Amino acid sequence: IMTPGVANRGWTPWVDVDRHAHGGVLIGLLNHSPHQPPNRCTAIMASRLDDRYPPLEIRTVLLTPFNGPFVAWIDLCIVPDTNIVFVSALTTEPPVGGASDASKDRRPTTAPLVRSLLGNPIADMALNQKEQAT
Image (cartoon, rainbow, N blue to C red; front, side, top):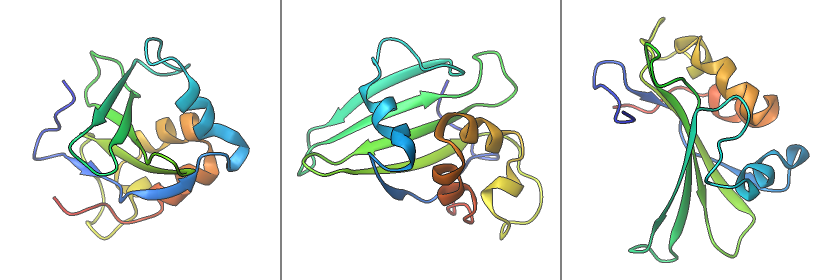
């Protein structure tokens, strides 16, 4: 369900954020039980990449309902022994506008979902950038 369709796939560049900054939004999400999705979210999944050094932990937060017309989610990549969390928003929402437009303009339905979970400061870091090329 979370593998994006090639035609509409889009994601923001990874942005690095201090887990304690911006009102502690990220630390709240990271401390939240991986067995219960945060408010306004459909599901959450925790995973770990042990084949990396250092091993990375990832939290994937599904923002859209299972029966929605597209899928949108946020990946939080946690680097051990640091306060850095890498954040990226991903979606299969059909894009509008040009490829050089910021993510918030190309994916107008996904952007508010990202903002509602991450808050404006963190969401702006990711959504005000051009999407990654597929």
